[in-house]
Length: 430
Image 1 (tube, one colour):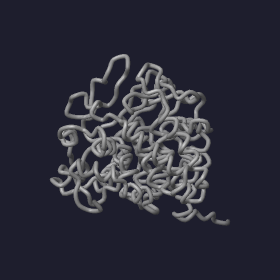
Image 2: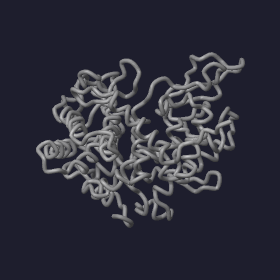
Image 3: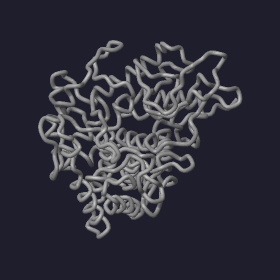
């Protein structure tokens, strides 16, 4: 019998990264450069996904998957749209005060689903725009204009307004009711938001806003690891897609003798340990199959399995060890921890692909899969379609692991450097 050899790590990562990038070529409105939130019919645009796309174009140029002129044209279309968008803040506008509504109509670019003006999603969009401006530095008319638009978009964001007079930033605002009645509490993906807000040359945050947020952090010891708690894995990844936290510390991390990169490494190990212990006895969980994060999953509309009632959460931020957990795993989430724990991330990617090939369609990750809801004819339950956030973080974190491209670009970004310093980060490359 002839043995089929598995691809080398480099070939595996190259295939997964390129397949993930393909999403942005398929889910784009060429006229506006806007990218759909997911590949399902009639999906709206997600402004955060546009930020991941802008960063991914840079990777694609370096990898030879996209011509530089094509990447500039695609980036320029999206940036021009946001520059010229309706900023009146009305119920059917695109944005207000330099921020943008979370979800937009794929054709018109106007608000849909009565979504909130989202501070964090705007920050992810702008992080992608800054990546483009740091990469496309040629002295050509198109690249000069691209950089000018990025500067306009960044400078017009009124971060102080988003404080609403409080100690920390608000999470969102709606024209129907004003600011949402909650802010950022506990550790989450918002470091990049605060760094951008503190690095603004026009409307930087007032007061000790960043430290007020870190005062809500929850430091824990779980499974023998001391770390800054955040249940879903994406909170330990998203800001790291753009910012290299190795060796730089804010006041909180100096006191803990840690840094956010090391913290993400420990959080990843906690995830694997949880899956190995598998307290809820879900199918598939072990040290080779883990990754609980914000992802799509089965809903309670599915029938009970083996006559047992179960609670299923649909699209939700699953986390460990306190949940929610319904047996749904995101294969892309373990891979997005590649820079923190390369060996176990690759091990998980290989093993999950081998056991549950249905979760990868042409090497592109489904948002989530659930082995506890397996059927004889289809295998594990698999989320239909693909989500842009999942594909974007895969592209970026594989690249940061391979070449540190995005990290190198953003280490040189004056706004990022200024924001980190204002937040109290010191040491390392700063």
